[in-house]
Image 1 (tube, rainbow, N blue to C red):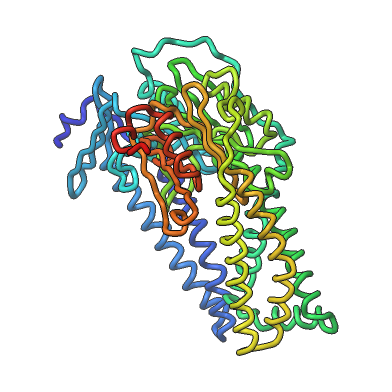
Image 2: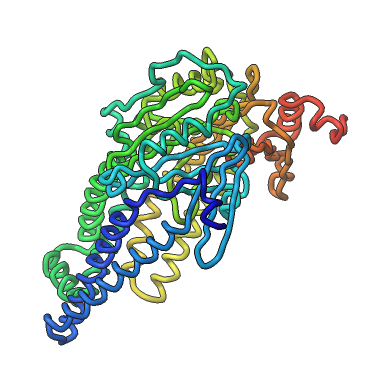
Length: 501
């Protein structure tokens, strides 16, 4: 591409250079502190260690800024009436383009450094082959004003009528924060914090001293009580971590229906995110109730839509969530408004229950899982230490009745039904999910039947769709019940394959 070919093309924002410099400086400091401590702990001199670490940090920051400078000089983009195009023309050349009528989402992200310098990252996607980046273009970064302009321009659809809906569908209610600790994230964060503390103590050469200090602290206290105390401390740390994570993710939350037929979710305290979903791509909603949230009367609303961006290994953002955990009444109201229905389909239908054989199947699965776990503790206890036998016995007293209760709850939660344009299914106990899927959005059915289901006259029917996760299942329905449900949901799709008695 010659200099004349750049006419009409735009460059990325040059403020990416100080952003990169500060980012790499943070990485250098984060890696330099434990490295210095490790060298000093190994007998090296502090000033020598510091000199090596500082030199390495200068190289790291300088190299990062230089690489970013080359990237900034090489990247150009432009928006034409038909396409969005990007080009890289430094050392090697590459071009990439997306047809504008295939663009399904334009998401804006700005971390604290981006916000400090007034820039944002724009990710434009078609919703196809996004796991490999084939249908995605990322502009990193552009000015905040340019990001908003691109979003409005690329999501404009001439065939969609303008709307007058100015009021938000939902805004943050700070009382929702009480649902943040009511999940398995809290103990996971607590255990992760304990593991991180042990790792840091190893880096600085203090792990043995930390272990000895803990042992001295609990000297004279029975082992089981000591373990319970440590678990309680981990839980408190996890709760604090869950609250902080919720605030970072959902502060300033707002759900809007914008002119042009677009749903827009904005959220984030330090890192802000703006996620857009075209309403014409909506195929339903999923009401998700993790056990802790369900006990406290809360649920979250996820979108079932075609062409939505999927989270990947580098980006764990959940692009489907329309509403965080909120009171069930609020969740069902938002679900109805998002679908433009007077009542949420999840509430408009009485779900049909499943045969009792499904209850026995769930009981065997839950109780059997606990028995296998206890058997492992028993074997290791006989081979290694009697402490594991005590722990296994304590777990058995707690987990066996809990597994029975969870199995019975999972059976009560099984159900399916049809209401208007939607088919509805529900399953799960640790994570109860109720989906409402447009019948017109179903493109196929898969019928699954294991050998154990076949003996009990049960089967699982799976609705295949181009939206959401791609498949939504009704588990452990009766054979006739499940097939009739699939046939009634989408007439003629399954009928040619059925043999009637």
